[in-house]
Length: 155
Image 1 (cartoon, helix red, strand yellow):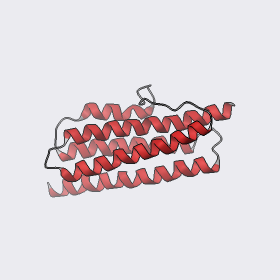
Image 2: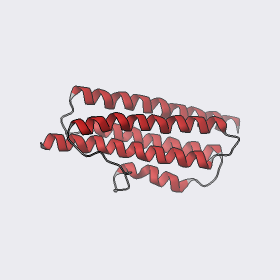
Image 3: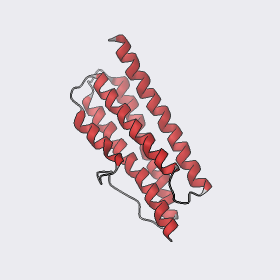
Image 4: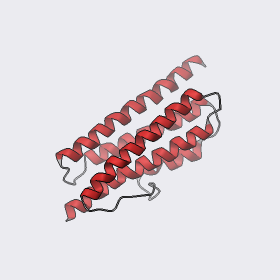
């Protein structure tokens, strides 16, 4: 039973970071200028990506007999970074929003790294789900970084 509880907690941590990610991108959408249609679309896509991740992770938590986490990570763990990011939006300019989002994507990568390195016994199918989601999130991170770099090069 302890294994299921440990595994459930690992999965719930990932659910929380994805909840944080949704909140972060919804905040980012509200912070960018109306003209930044490209960023709004990307941020919406990334929030939706996290919604899909949550659905997949929640199914596994339920299969393990656990309760699915519903909140964000303001519990004091490292994943709280998205909450800090939302407080750091100082302007509505593309660079600051993209930098904050990249920082959040770094935190998400760290959370997924921690999940893959956990002491909890990760069945192969769950390890694969986590690895696949981490890879998708890395693509999102790289896209944000690319947009940030391009914007900095232009300015």
